[in-house]
Length: 319
Ligand SMILES: N[C@@H](CCC(=O)N[C@@H](CS)C(=O)NCC(=O)O)C(=O)O
Image (cartoon, rainbow, N blue to C red; front, side):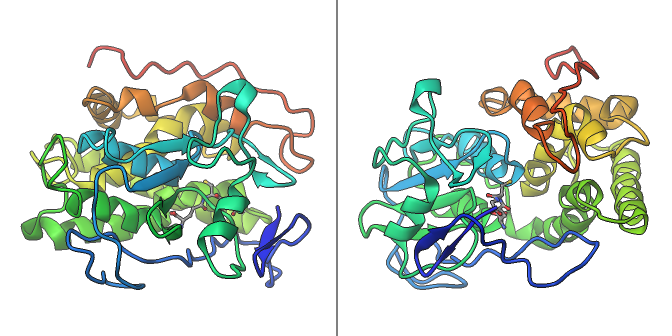
């Protein structure tokens, strides 16, 4: 795994202190906010005013949390204002690394690994080096490594530059959006990981039940709605889609989330294709990378590194 310890990369550190058969995701630590005027946000310190070209986003195509930020950036038309660098879609002894020969280039500093950006942008950071992470080129500091908060910043703070002014977290729908997020994150977005990384039958059973309970409930909801909350696309949809995009080609087989496929749910499958057709979304979806990434060689889960060919999924299929 590897961690930064006091700003120095330790390839053998795991940070897992509790022996458990259940997968637990550690909390993001860098929690500042970009705001319209640079005032302090709900957490962290102030001084991060929204400006075109000032902030750089580090992502990986395979990471679903990074995918949310790419989706919000695309839907708001922020691509010209928030440049990105994409890490190679696999982790190494140095954690997330670039691979210029294959097009994965650090467009900001020309660096070799993401941990270098963390060390440069923080004071003696100790913790996981995760994507997505937002870097401020003006102060040289990391702003945030929490995707749920980065997408709220992209929705609000950059409104003056946004190519599309739609508000995906309108105040009138906030509590309903938060309710869906609070349901979908543990049961589904992270539920697939609890299933796939379970280290006992019980932990697996719990995970897989949660995943399909959530999919069944959403399938029913979508019988009468275009989007989760009705006619209006919201942040709750943006947070759901990355899990649906990976479901059949990755989670279904690599994580044994296999009671049903996405394409077996008529309403969810139509919904996912409707979302895929929105401007800029298709450019963020990389099915071959998901297929290969989640089935990469692993002593525990896939000792021979065999990548399945199916199931075949085409999000551009007519609805
Ligand atoms: N809370 C974070 C979680 C991000 C996260 O777990 N990213 C994974 C990739 S999908 C990662 O970079 N893991 C590296 C590690 O844990 O060392 C967020 O949502 O932004």
